Length: 507
Image (cartoon, rainbow, N blue to C red; front, top):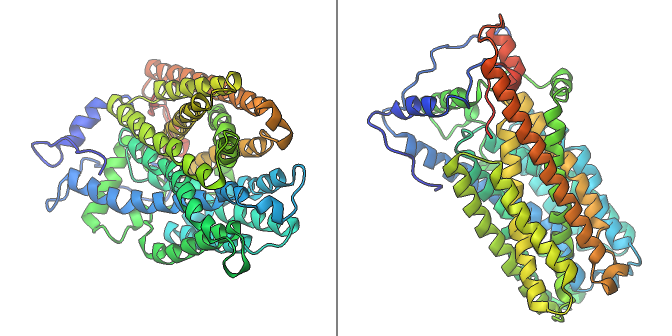
């Protein structure tokens, strides 16, 4: 599904070759409970009934499409309020001044607060239970959003929508990270993250069709957008209870030989996972003792502002170019589609060269160029519309690389679960800023303020990427020069995760 694995002379020779090829990017500590016993012989052959390429393809088909559809529907239900606004939401609910912006903002309060607890519950309850339950709930809340009668009702539904969706993105990224090696992850992450772009394109097409139902059973078109898209989510959630994959150690659709092989190939790349031990408050505190955790948060935070700024306000911006409501929805589709295609190209070359840093800065520069055009050009609508392509292609291509880079550099279940949720949770504070970046009063001024805010935060992300890259390069060099035997036990090394002296970060 994501490219063929290189064939080898024997089933296990690919593991030996990769151990040499990525000698600086793996370690073999044992993150686990002190009383746990492990087989220290990690040289395991691929099961005789299959090959590594076939097994990875089997995992791709089971893990990536399901999680991508899940997040596509989550992002669709989160941002379809922008499409609904074009079809009369603000007029019917008599929203004034910044009330629409307030409704966007309140979504992020529970969304940010509950992301780390959600990942803890994900590990405790198993992904197929937790993620499908959350999916059904945010679908139900979206239906209710189409039935509200006033501003207070809209605020309430947006709050509970944020609560139900809080576990979707960090939980899915965490789950994907526990199935693939770091050198394999970027294309999978970008395909998954590309579901946001597909949701934007799909949402525009759906809204243009559903908007024509305005007046059916006395409901305006904006209500039908929420009701029908929420209903779709609830139906899909029922089937996803049986389809969402669990962690490798619990995957019933793999036999014991396949589960063992997957666990051990990941162990060579990332270290043991500590799946046996629950995450405690001490684990959470220990994660935040590493300054790179905070840098990773700012890397993502800086791009969330332009990402949500575009997602929530693109239809309104495009409408200023003189399009009707239906034309506006249709013109919102191509920039989203282009961003998905470009993100997959970036991901392909990032995996090909086994490098992340440069592939964060190149898309960021493209996004800055797009916003630069939007700030300075106000009479050429074709050029302005073209600049939106640069914005989406840049922002939505850099984001999955940043999250993948940070996530896959975290060792073990505990640090990865907490670190991923932190990066996504802290980063989404930027969503609050984005909801006030484009205000109605700035429309006569061509939204210059909003574009300037977006450029500023993109530069913050670029700076954070530079700091993070410098940190991992420096720490890898220090560990190369340090004595190999520091008297640490295997358990101590595994409890340290990626802070272990045996670990090497991926640049």
